[in-house]
Image 1 (cartoon, rainbow, N blue to C red):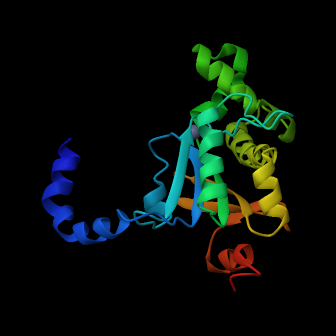
Image 2 (cartoon, rainbow, N blue to C red):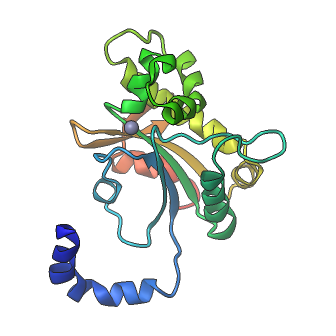
Length: 214
Ligand SMILES: [Zn+2]
């Protein structure tokens, strides 16, 4: 509440014109799916302004997949957001962004059966298969490895939605896995050619945006 009062006093006078324009409609560049973690400061590390990103956040930046009938197996709200962003707003990019020291991923490497709260325990089942993609869940740094593998798994889950798979195949949509390293305040992007996450610097951004926006 103090923050809102501060916004009202300091920011609102200069931002009002911009918001009045935004009130007429939105045209975001991307759908950004991130963890609910309070440290994942998307607007800060992506230098975004109001109107730039359509955002879904949940514990573990998970996308519950579609079943054979095309409906989400677990989360209609997220599927609705995907439909709205891809189908109606026609965003050009979808990003799934994991992060270091993720509580959800730490819970998974320790074992989902040990998670004490019932909904979280159930929800994490949609990330459990990422455990197969890391060498040793007991090794130091396993939760961070899992988080990186999980972002890629969730891209597969996105593709289980027909409108996503179709848009990607037709070249209208790009899917990306990002990873926010909190301690270093650094965003990494998965490079499909190198098969690993690399810092998202200018050169890497050019590679990922190629060829259509170069
Ligand atoms: Zn997290």
